[in-house]
Each structure stands twice: as structure tokens, then as C-alpha cells.
Length: 277
Image 1 (tube, helix red, strand yellow):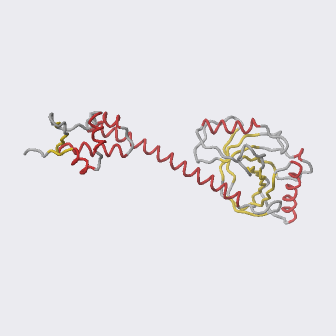
Image 2 (cartoon, one colour):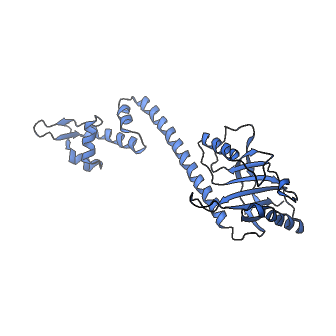
Image 3 (cartoon, one colour):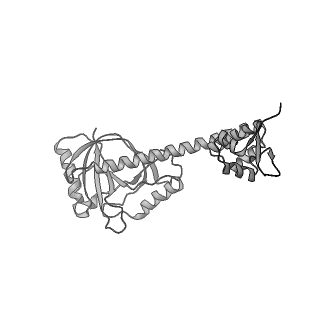
């Protein structure tokens, strides 16, 4: 039985592929007509060719390049199966990456929402917190007066090596005690929140991945000024002691930028929070 031939316009309508694209496929040798009229130069295609277009459309849909599709046309069924398995692996990696980006956006939005939700300054308040993974680095000589950029740089470099997203927040950890002078207050760790759930492998000996635990916290927030830091901390400390609150003796200090413009003076909100038992 003789096969029916279709003009390029008919193929375009039947397959929903533009005439221009079909001509380009012919030009690069991806999908050539079965017959070209030598007088009119019109292209004609056979019924049996249509499945080739189905394969091209399917592979193109999953992101395979035209060059790779052209190579795949020479595969045996077994080779094509192996190729599709490889493409499936690529797609899974892409999906995992998109999920990671989605989670990063969610966590960044949560950080911004939490910052905007602070509606009282210089006053003790309570709030419920989700668990937060942090990348931390040990220290013993740092105080609110003195935090060298080398600590932040080390955290940034580690996350860049891991190809992980960076947070715009930093923080410090110090023991919950009574301090009469900031010279007595020494940070045990400097940290930045981890925006992704990715496992961190390139850790230096003084680094660790920790978790700020979920729970209810007693907090105070204020605009950072060195001269008033101790007063704000003491306000939180005395409230806890006067109210006889049972707390985990660890203070988490979070720095949150108030603006992002390089043309404006840097300003930060500091939040001190302590977990209730």
C-alpha cells in the first residue's frame, strides 16, 4: 500500500510545529522530508516519518538539546533506554535544585517576616521559634565591642565552597550570666543561619553545624549601639530573674540589617533571645 505524502504545511498543522521549525530541522539534518520536488522545491513527508517527530518533541520537552537529539536518533533501543535513564537523573538533580531554591526563598521570607513582626523595641517579649540550623565558628576573645570580619569571611567562604546560598544575618552565642561590664561578656561562637538543608562537608576544625532549638523564647530587641548594649541585656536578665523564669543558660544574639543601601549608614536591629525550659 502506497504511503500518503504530506506537504510541509499539512505536517505543521498535524504536529503543531511551525513551518519555520520544520525547515530548520531539515537544514540541520534532524528531520528531513522523504521527498523534495526538484521543480518546486516543495518538501513532502510520509506517514511513517511522524513518529520521528514524536521522539524529537518528547526529548525536547524534557530539555534535551537538538544536538543531543540528533545523536540519539542513531541509538539502538537499548542505548536510547540508557540515554533516557541519564536524562531522568539530570531532571531529578534539577528538581532537587529547584526544591532547594524554593526552600531558600521560604526561609529568607520567614526571616524577613520575623524581623517585621518585632513591633516593640527596648521591651521584653515572648515568641515561639522554629528550629534553625546554623553554621558556627568558635571564638573566645570576641565581645560586642570587637568582632573582626575574618570570622564572617570564614563563614562566607565555607558556604561559597559548598555552593550554598548566603544569609544576610549573622549572630553570636554567649553564656547567660550576670554581666556588670561588656568586657566580661565573651562570645563562644559566631554564626550565620543556613538557608538550605544541604549537608555541609567543608568544615574547618573550629566550625560546626548546630541547631538553635525550636521552642518558646524570652527576647528583647533594640537598635544596636555599643553604649546601650549592656543596658538592654541587663533589662532582659533582670526580667528573667525577677519573674523566676526557668531558661536554658544560652543567649542567642541575632543581627538584622535595617537597610540594604551602600549609600546609607549601616544600622542593625539586635535581638537577644533565650529559650524557656
